[in-house]
Image 1: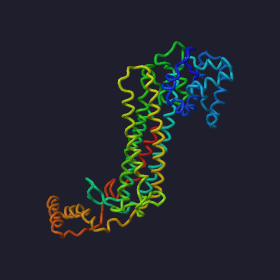
Image 2: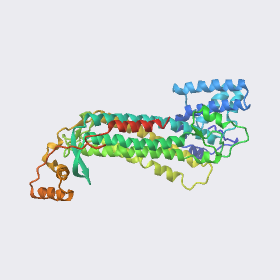
Image 3: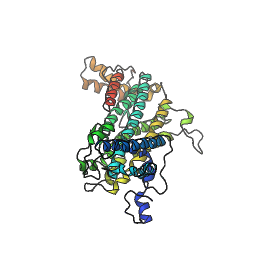
Image 4: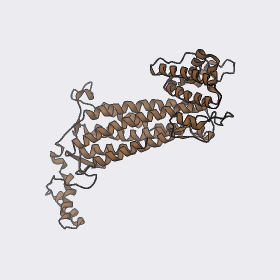
Length: 431
């Protein structure tokens, strides 16, 4: 296998296979970003006189041709090529000769990988943000559509007070705002240019790092070259924390839906095509989709810890362990997108039971409403509480199922527009 770091001696095949691992598989995701980083790098090299204008024009043109191949799906790693960086440089050298070898001037594979990852994770964060926005919009639509449909609210998994589907859907919508804040923290970590830090100690070329920062669209630079390399693992963990945050939200929604479509609840239902049956029980409509969503979301919440354990107890500077981060984070990103798409599909097809509270078992949900009515009539709250408690104990309590909550964020005042404003403000942070 051809390696950029080869000193001309044959590497043991078993060692080479072990150290490369799944890098070739995951590196294809970085191909576009590797070329984008190289385009900025060669423009900067021309600016500081390390490439002639003709050399820069040649490299720029060929790199753009490779980028077209990547976007067309016509780019692949050859069998004896170690990684995407080697493949790009190999293609350039084949096409333009020795000038292709100049592309690595002032750059180490360490900062090349790091800039690829930063650009890739910025792109992925954009996709995650779009998925969250889709789910947010669906939840707000459902919240408004079903805002007048009451349902039980629970504490300690016991029926407690009246809630509504508007309140329930709207709660998950607003919770996604907090998840977006976590995602923004990951964005800020990714939005710093490490290119020019080389192997972590800079180099003697007069690199113009401000120029590559502008060309690559980074909001800032990772200035200290040692700190730039120490960022390896930190951005991945920040992204994982954001995935875990959204995973916690969607996992709880999945748990609610699994429970609420249970026949003993019957709050919601889904078309047959979105449920599964039993091999021996013909009546079953199992919530397999929601159960798998819940399981996937639980796994997402384990990813920050796995990254933390992988990167713990390392001195500063590069370590090959960092290569394994891709094996942890990249599949988690795939899983998130699959989960988000499935949750959207389920929400688009959810059916709500509008008559839940007709069942007498839920009459006691309205005891607090009765206590409050007595208190509003002048009875001290504690006396009102004892009075309603006495009626319940004696079996004389009769539920009045009218609800008149009007304060901000309650059943009668969902604040949908205000939550939308908050969400839009969070989205605007990314610009």
